[in-house]
Image 1: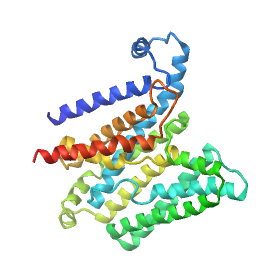
Image 2: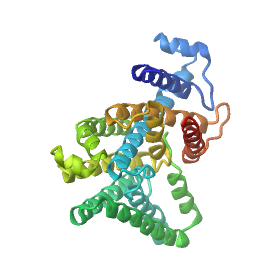
Image 3: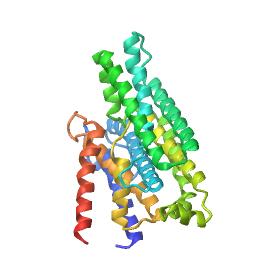
Image 4: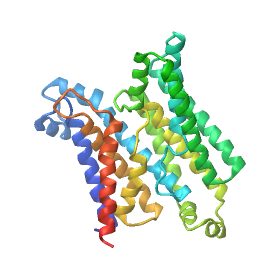
Length: 334
């Protein structure tokens, strides 16, 4: 299968994933209503219109944006660190957001004053991500070493986890449950305004990455080669970290931490296209990330039931075996 055919296959899979996500859930929309939607006719049952356009459509768009954004973030981090096991959360951005949300939810419970709302949780996550990003950038300007920066990110995660554990020990069960629910991730609570904001951030960040592809390809061949090609390594790394922070911070703020997608998607793209060339991998991770996230969200809805699984659990349960299978399949061909 040639590269254009592979892209056509992914686009077709994305369309099918969107349709399944829209029509499968606690209420399964009949096929006849699907035909009416495609042909721009009115639904026979007005309730179907409300279900799709007021709840499922924004959630479907968010799932696609989250998958694409995390996929691009993972590709950026793995390319900059030249390490296949790092993901978009390696710099501690989600940990910073989680700590900020924990201080809001758990801290409010401890002092006996509640400031918790959907808006305040999103705001806390944004502030936590921004502060963590500023901290990471200040470290990068001082140490100028990507491996040391990786260690700093891991330490931020450990430090944040320790504080959250202390807060959890002293808080009430109800507040602890709220924080646990947030940490599981949720794609379905966003208004159309929030969806628009997330759309602008993801599209802007991905578009900005296009201008970094050439110097990043040079960096994959080694810093000495990149320097000989006139690449300003420090500037490129700084921009990559900034864009990753923007993507991960906004996604975590709106939907919570989503595990595994950012780590798995770049691997799936490399295996499917059999290349390390970032010009090919960038659109690939956007498509594969969106498809995988939509499939995970559809499974999480447990179609035909009123139950919903945590999206984080589904991404890990589906993604981990998939990557292991593809790695073993790839090894078997050699």
